[in-house]
Image (tube, rainbow, N blue to C red):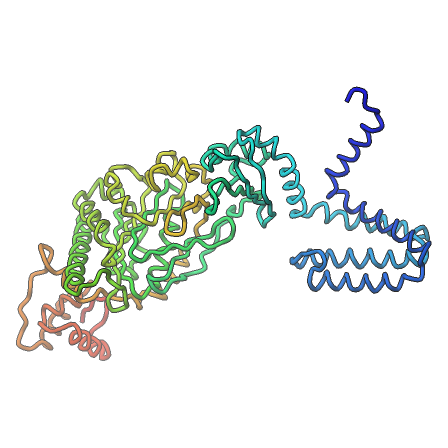
Amino acid sequence: MPDEPILITALAVTGRTLFRYRSELAPFTVASVLTVAALVLHRTHPETWPVVALLTVAATLGAWLQGWPYGISRTKEKAYAATVSGVAGAWMSVATALGPGQAPLPSLLVLAVIVFAVPWWMHRRRRARVRVDRVINAWPDLAEAIGLTGSRIMSAVVDTWGWRALVKLRPGQSVTDVVARVPAIESALGTRPGAVRVEHDPAHAGRYTVRVLAVDPHAGAIPWPGPTARSLNDPIDLGVFEDATTVRVPLLRRHALIGGTTDSGKSGVLNVMLGNLAACEDVVLWGIDLKGGMELRPWAPCLARLATTPAEATRLLADAVAVLDARAHAAGNDNTRVWIPTPTSPALVIVIDEYAELADTAPAALTHAESVARRGRAVAVDLLAATQRPTQKAMGGGALRSQMSVRVCLRVRERRDVDLILDKGMLSTGWHAHTLDAPGKFYVLADGHNQPRRARGYLVTDQDVRKTVARYANERPELDSLSQDAMGTGEHRPAAIPATPDPEQALTVALADAPATGLTVLELMRRTGMGRTWVYERLQALASTDNARQIARGRWRA
């Protein structure tokens, strides 16, 4: 006030400054308290120095072993607290007996304050906690500046990468209002662009969690730990969220779509899925790669079929439709609703790299793919499609996209592509894939993942691919006889070859006349007129005497 005494004003300013910087001044505060306490004890009870020494030992051991009474758990912090407790207690014990002014106690206290103040001032979590306290105190003014007047911070916690706070909105405000103001929040808090995350509170529509990342936890690549699934019933680990939790996505009876622009890490996420599916003993993998097999060729030993031309892709997807038709017919006869994948009756997963190429080069294949998307899930015939051009034409006008229950959206160039990959309206609710700034960063929309949380996929190297292929190529299952017979019907069925009176001789002749790529078991069954078990037993017997060999999985020749 104009007539307020200058002394009171100066004291008020000094008090507010000392309170504001109380954390930074903590070393000097501790030193002052030690000096006053030692002076009082020396003048009144100097004989109590052994008690002070015993308390010092107890505090030092408690801090080192349990972090008590400071409530800390990190080893470095325990060591710091134990050292400070020991040095401070030892100084106070001597000062109680001799007096705090006895040389060289004052010099030792000043030296200790300087030595122990430096790590205290530099400690990241302490500085983060101070910033959070100041944000809480300043939030009413900040909220008014960014258009969230009436909101208040209910609680705040410092974590590994920054801090997070639970904020309550005033009645009538929603999280959508907050999402639209994220750039303003970053400006008000003084953070780097892209440091603020807003997450819905599932328990209350008028609350949200704001996360501020002082350091990007996804700045570096995350090595792939290897396959974590051995069955399609197991969820697949794709990567890590920013809070260090694992991104786990179920694929059983689900179609998946991976979308992202060039160099966004689309192939990396696809490789993570392929690596896990290759380890599953109840999955048969087919692949379509219209870039000449450039992406899927390294996985060829684990793929039962690989199509690299539009004609092959059309034929492969037509066979997939035949398989799902046969399975659906069998399920109807058996009065069962779903196909349960097992090693003897595995699921069929069709991996399509650059799905948009089908729309341009193979319209018939696109029609078959949409049929699989609509009807394949119940009979365990699933699609795993990846594309860098998520156009309306490529996605079949939305008919196929609507069947994709697992969607992974990497970086996109245009904001509208977010809605094309994920769903209409997702951009406005915080799924800002156009702001992702590194390959492998993505958003995932699937069961259990309905919040816009950033993640980074594992990095799968060429060596990881080779190691995984070598480990699981010989353990891949074959389609059940029902599905294989279904593929032999219709216009693509090979011409039947009458069985000879001697199936042993027919098998020998067929293997001798086989092309360099070998003959499939289905073809050998037709040439001999015998069943699958008989053919397999004879092949194993011939292989044991070096009269037959397996060229590739399921293909034989003499």
